[in-house]
Amino acid sequence: MPYRIRKNDIVIVAGKYANLPKFAGFYERAMRIYDNPIELRKRYIERLGPLGPDDQWRTKWYDLAVAPSYAAYEPITRHGIGPKLFLDPKIADELGDLPAAPDSTTSDNLKTKKHTE
Image 1: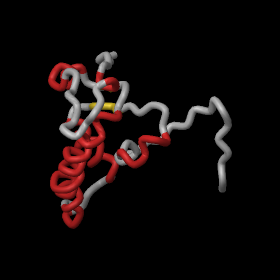
Image 2: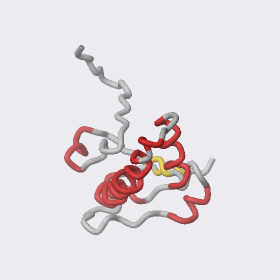
Image 3: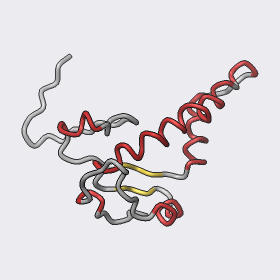
Image 4: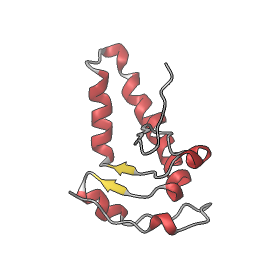
């Protein structure tokens, strides 16, 4: 079902790969929410529901595929991110103002405030 986007509409595109460089021209602003990696893993596993003995591969999948995939994705997309929201104040202290990715050509989007509310 098509949806018409009108002038001044706010559209939120959420998802791990929403900030890939090939999509950057479609957005006015991009943001990222950071959280404690341990909490992220915990919530991922909780969303899976009860796991039986034959389902343990799902937690290994997170450790072997999901987490490393994000670790590779984050620096590639870092330069296009404006606001950075930190759900855990400790993460904000650890990450601070993240430097631009090695392939970044601009630093304008990196001047952000830490949000630790």
